[in-house]
Length: 43
Image (cartoon, rainbow, N blue to C red; front, side, top):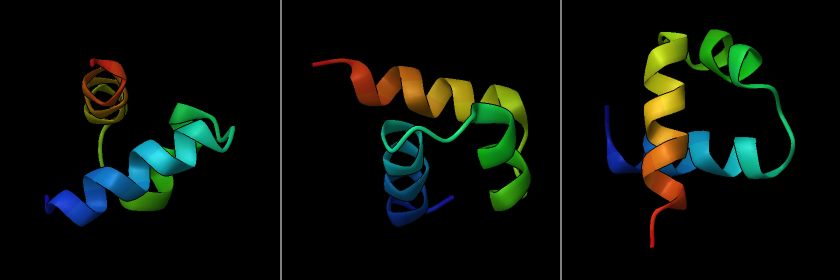
């Protein structure tokens, strides 16, 4: 997965999309979305 894709997933989550919907939209697992979101919230 590219940095652009990770950024897009994090942006979608910040915009209020559900993690399960994001996973389906990007064709990745829910656990991947959760990890990306968690990593994006770290300072």
